[in-house]
Length: 343
Ligand code: SF4
Image: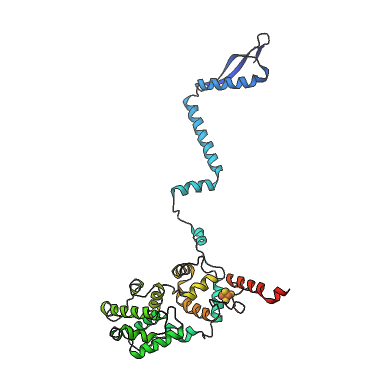
């Protein structure tokens, strides 16, 4: 009830408040000011409530309700906010099956591309097929001598054409390619035997040093781990992986030479084009292990005949519609062609 006195412009108003859990109505005299009347009344109720806090039960009920409201608000923040909060604490969240599938990257159409390369290589008429380093070791000799031949052929092969390597291996075998005999051969004579392979002087030195180590530490055989092979002078990861495969019959990784490195990048099989070691790691991250042994020989021949370093034969390549580099090359060649310029 409101009792108004317009004369002295005051007003007695009922104000609701709660004390000891009971609703209570008080009457207060306030100055009458029509526009501010409701505002004044609300303010009064607030002030009284502050001076008479709710009893414990109500206070607790209210706290519970506030909690519920907060939870409700939290839910409304959405899954994204919750995940964000969780990630702050779990720096390495365990990915679920779907996440794992998403993180395992592999290039599009790689199976089709690989089958096309097999098709283009089916005649086996590239230099690597007849005179590759893996053809230089005889099969009718003692296993440890054959393993040594594999290693020496690999050491000669870098920066050297297959034909040149094959001829040098022939001269070495005629000379007597055993660890014992090479240890007894001077570096000069060895150098003359392997000319004109690339970096023949350095290679002669490395072969001499490696042969001494093999005689001394490995009982005239070669080591059978990547780590130990890489400790030999002039032997890097590419040679070591190929050697493990061809000398010991153990596939430990992909042998990435200049052809595998270049072609993998052209096909979009690697995301970065840095070093052959980076390419090896990237290829091994998605290519099934059963194909690791095949891929070096396949791509080396493909690189010698079709996907050459200079002006690859994209026009005749079966992968021209799937290969990112091939599409670019062909588009540029069309732009530069005289026919196009005339029109
Ligand atoms: S389309 Fe050209 S660049 Fe691509 S794989 Fe074939 S030859 Fe190489």
